[in-house]
Image (cartoon, each protein chain N blue to C red):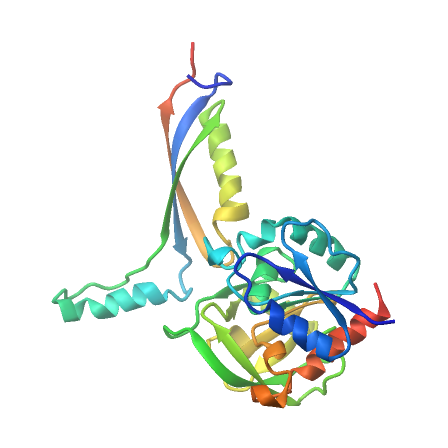
Length: 224
Length: 94
């Protein structure tokens, strides 16, 4: 059966079409989940895409986390459903408490839009199950608040529980421990700053994101 | 007069990034000051100033509600601290 992927659309999201197209290209049925509807429409996996949800007012993700759809996403995640937050989506998931820590402003003073190398650190997550630990992927980043930070005890927990799934090879933004992506204790919620959906075709400069997206599809096909 | 016979408080929440959290706005301002002729200004930090009024039966309750609001929404405790100033603008009606 074809897996159904739901991509959340907030006012100010701007990567939802890229995500829809990338997943459709992998054979999934990809659909939009409207932020004002308190349901995930029975999809098999949820993607919270990049952009500037609610204008990033107050803080990135601070207002989006109170959207009706997020209560449904919380329930879906609590039941073990695969949830991926990309860039602004990662910020939304940390604000919602689905992932620990926070994304602060980049070290240095710049918004960074660049192709970077990230290393797969763990294959024990719904985003990296089909990736090889130690492999290096070329995936673009595009953010101002991508500098991951958390309390020392949280970092120790992430490290000891193998929950850091992606690290930057050459840290572009000051993230603690070079973190580019982490997963929840249940390993079904993943947040990452790089944009795998923008590295989904050689024409885009890299297709290295496909292995991550197909991992999500794999998790989706297993079902909740 | 308040609808429920409560009091109205004027609230000012000052949100600041916690020490050690990157503040590009503050750094940029600080670095630009010498070019304008302002020497010796250091430690510039840019925060947010949020003002509103709240109705509550008494000051303790108002402070509790504002504290809750700060923790759950106005600040992200991982990276921000807040201080609250609160004053009565309209006392309980007789």
